[in-house]
Image (cartoon, rainbow, N blue to C red; front, top):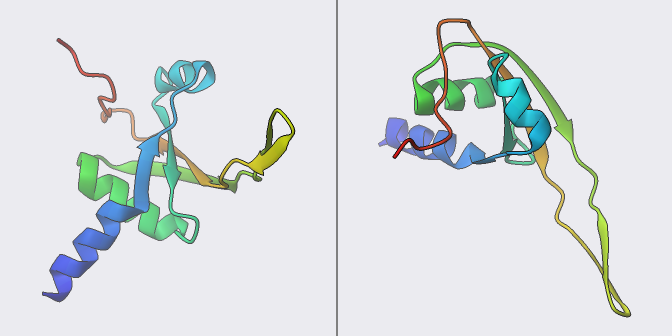
Length: 101
């Protein structure tokens, strides 16, 4: 039961891939960007990526993005803060983020 809880925690660490112009260019260099849990550390992120995608991680960089202020008319609010993980894989591994039809 304990091992099952650990795998569920690993699956919940990775929220979604961050796909922008800059990150799609980085995919050519085998570098991927993911939004992760705010309290995750590099070791847990590495375990989660290797478990979910069955790849070997070479290097991980993380950063906390600050909350951004958004205005709609006279109302101001904040976009939620998230932690970003920039993951470099070994050369023989890739992650397929885009479905081929």
